[in-house]
Image 1 (cartoon, one colour):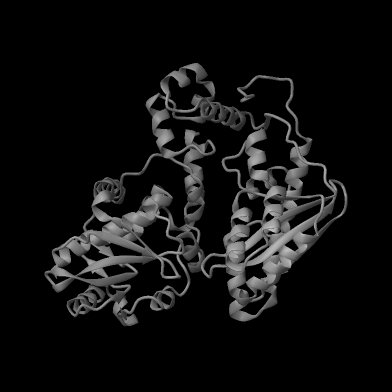
Image 2: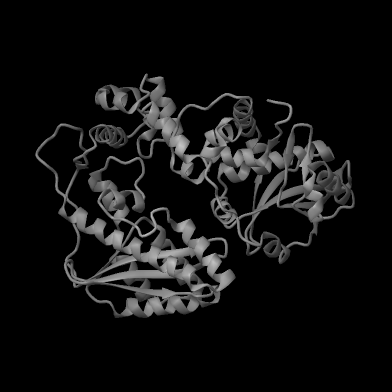
Length: 482
């Protein structure tokens, strides 16, 4: 590893999103780097806005002066001075010769260390208490630096959410995995470019265009939807490196060599490979939808950094061929969330002989969250769940498309829908809502509403398209008919 390149906690986050991110930061042409706004970065990392304010409601701590962060050595010495006093510290800087980290909170606990009759543990503030590797490994990293500073390795590391709920894990349980990942990162920092791989989180990086270009350039097998890096390694071990290799492979040989894989998985991957090569969709089965008097196409806009669901959008259509009208309940301030929830429940109470179409699990999850937060009659909750239909599940069950990803944006664009803002997404909606709250300029709010209406209209188009698809008589590719 170059002497000037210190290992940071950010490297672990980047590695789990896309290992190429680290390599491109150092070695790629910076003109090809896409800017990501600070708010989007917070969203992607699972953080909350005003982390210090939220943490301050649950923990007392000291902060370094802003000017001290201009020099990391100075920030570290200021942090060390506060540590010797046994202070809790927000965004302190920890350093060793080659490592530098900035945990959200350093908290002093009773117990001997080289600092005195106390030792430090680390916290990160996250929106949820989910503990994926990308959350755990930075905390292990901080804990190992602390061990070098205070002579004692913290037994546990912690995540705390905006409500003050905590979750811990044993640091020693993950040290070996941590060092394996650290070694991978250090090889990248030293110049070793990772093997091509494309996954959905690559879209979160500033270098997505280069990730896509690299995988497409060699037709890498990772272009297959939902194929993991572990799957890629298994296929590489069988001499299958490209989409073409997988499409041409004998399915029975794959089944024999991949005994721990369900056959449905092999079938799906091979179907996807053949469809990517042909450019033509494969219809596995006809999608069945209920005949109802009213169809509702439903999409929710949420700001996870504020923990608020600010727009519940609906496209309401009479039957499957009538006129469709866009309706919404909109929280112009976060404090209006309860009001729009009850407004939605009133609409739900009035619907009879209906179906609610949404894409993926999110709308169901938010419904349950808001019902828990503000209450809902059990009859209405049951009514929602009994009439809600997930079009993402319908899509992956019935068709194979020549796409790398199956988001609503990817699928609806493929069948012909065009968003008013082609670069918009859920994270951009949050950014517009944030700008509306900051400025009061309604043009930002109008962009949120327009984007939401596009989402529900795209959902309607997808439902109509699926209802028209049926298998052909040709059986030139594998199909899962079971």
